[in-house]
Length: 437
Ligand SMILES: Nc1ncnc2c1ncn2[C@@H]1O[C@H](COP(=O)(O)OP(=O)(O)OP(=O)(O)O)[C@@H](O)[C@H]1O
Ligand SMILES: [Mg+2]
Image (cartoon, rainbow, N blue to C red):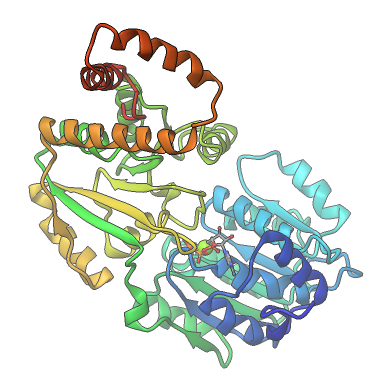
């Protein structure tokens, strides 16, 4: 099979898996990094959120692994458990026809099961640093055959105090191993630190004009602490998001806001590090399956998560810095789709806003909190839009025969325009009639 992916040097089994996934063209970062990584070179790469960095490092890992050798040949480190699982699943789909085994190892899961699986053999391991080290210390994870170490979200991995763990892991690997750093953000300090570990590294960064994210419409609402909750209610009512990921600064605030949104009729839940691991995975699973339309999370969900069709990211609390903003809003507007990012700023947030604007290189446009009247207008617009779609689609729906009969009877008493208008009014009064809460 000759495709744009095989032209990059990827093998037939990998190209076949990509074909089945529906990947037609490599993204720019994949185009640039894959040949380089297949060559075994060290790489420091930065590319926007949602542009396919996982496959950019994951595909070469599969092709550089020898399925005949049961030892661990590649290790990917990720900052959160959920991200480790997601990256592992992505690499698993790429390796479907390659005979390469991929294993996730992360905390909050029984360690003996992970030890058993490691004993059974795996060429690629994806894990969080703590559990990786733990398994190394128990002599369960052996890195003497390691050929590649990837740090996904490299800046956070080096930032969060994981630097010592990373160093220990590097020391346990052969000196000639390939070292690969990927992130959407690589502040200068991290770049310097990273470069110290890389041998004759190649640095890939996206040019400034490709760096801003036109796919994500960004707005900021200036609020007071007292009216912020009401402002959120109004913005949600006006936007009627198909799905929204809302960020708060603390776990407690996430719990409280999720509860409040439930009371308002949203299918909302909180996601943060105080939940046990199975609860964390369950919430994320329900969100991915669209059984929840709102998740209120701490920054544990800010990095790397790829949730299909997430329409809105909302910063209920502004993030601490510009990098965090870029990662949070990057949960929407992925893989060529569009998205909306909304931020609430308190009077004390001026400094943070400036940090964000500096990091994104764009000014955040202040927006006006929608009035009750505007919300009403938006609701009606959505209802009419729905009606229009139904009118165009449902001509042959057998159920309509019955309704037409009812309309016919009503017409003997009332004007057709009055019937339709009154019905629209009733439909709008029905809670959830347009999907808004
Ligand atoms: N070549 C491709 N063609 C089509 N879709 C792709 C391609 N490469 C990746 N994708 C899809 O794009 C989405 C985003 O990819 P990925 O999660 O790797 O982004 P990322 O660059 O790592 O973002 P982040 O910085 O947020 O971690 C995924 O759903 C992935 O399946
Ligand atoms: Mg990623």
